[in-house]
Length: 275
Length: 292
Image (cartoon, rainbow over all chains, first blue to last red; front, top):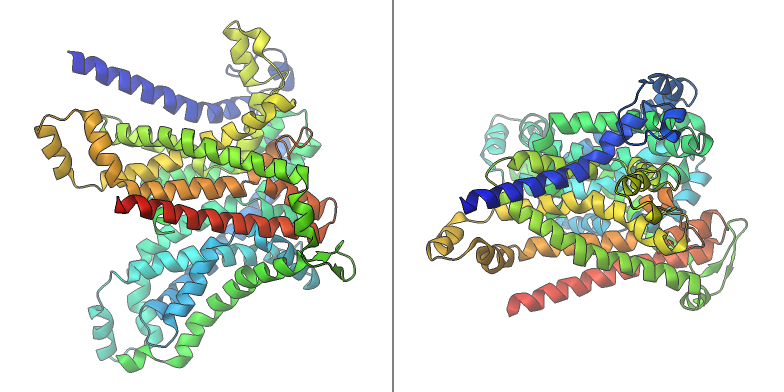
């Protein structure tokens, strides 16, 4: 009897904490559907009396949130693609191929894990400016790839080290060259590690702010994080529209999370423990 | 096989792009930053070399010292409040009879959401006139407590740290939870058979075995606190009157608002050195303990 009572207390405490973690997001959803008169007229916490979907139309139509959205989708997917290709090939080269200096190269790459992006901000800004690629997609894709690679190479390389070599040897006996062994044998085998890398890269580049705010000031190339910042500047008092923008920015992440929550959690833990 | 694996052309093809991009974009800029930090430079023209003068100025700059103090306070809060709380949650959730997956999933949601969204959301929670926090206080009959949380110096600092602590509780919890789950159950069963209580098991077995994971979490939250930028930038941008300023915000405004490129670079070098120093120190601290 006493045990049961204790169990209930723990459950209630855990549920209360779950509410603390989720309620702000639920609140965001409700105020994104309210008019200003409702928010400022006392209905701060409740459901909207009148569901104002126009907030979303105006976030999309006037504030161009969809443009930012597509920029984010573009920058993030290209970044993920490049990181996956480069990380898998170079992890293969470091982990499997035979050459001198493997250790040194791995150390240089791992050094990248330690470097805070602050350190690179101004030098990168100057270089991108001189190359005239500030305010292009490259201004974000190149640094995102560079700062995503160390962790990605590390994850793929340590995954690869746990795979036995028999299949590669069999492929070699069948007359496959290095590139075909990589493409037909290795790449399919390391797919689980690449999924981890993809999720990791998605979260960091979709949410990145410091580079985005510094390297992109033209409206056409702004990603969601920067776009939302400038939208907030222009809409200071229009909570509903801002809320709608925030919801649109969050939906893909939440969808990915709900569909793949185990995989996402696993990726983050792996990234943390290995890093 | 060996011949295939030492194919130099493929090796170059596979390795050079990664090596080139990491060296050019990640490694070399640190050295450039260090060079910039010894210049008196407004970004236009060449700038003049002044040696370590920027660093000498830095250690006497009260605004800078205050920003460092703020980030250290934040680090202390993360390590001594957030982490123990995450640890408690991790152990409880790992042992809970039902709902394990739900709690894990729910606690983790804020971690993956963009800091810009989190920042905007909390700005509205804290809003002095229409915010959620003040509405809650009103409902509890505590109207006299309601205030403009981010607008005044005495509350702004703590209030700007709370959302970050809130966001990352689930992150540390999940890492520790995975650590707890990977421990061999035999130890626990043996201890429970010997009549140990669950609390005793947690303190005597689970937590000591978790030490490597705890090191990861302490390092992450310390380094994260020293580098914190995004959320403060969105919430307060260091204001009011620099009361919530942290080194990275000071660096950013020095470079991109006041165009003191040299001085700002000195701050960025300070941040790197600070992070490096603390990482080495933590490695040392945890090693010492393992010997005991």
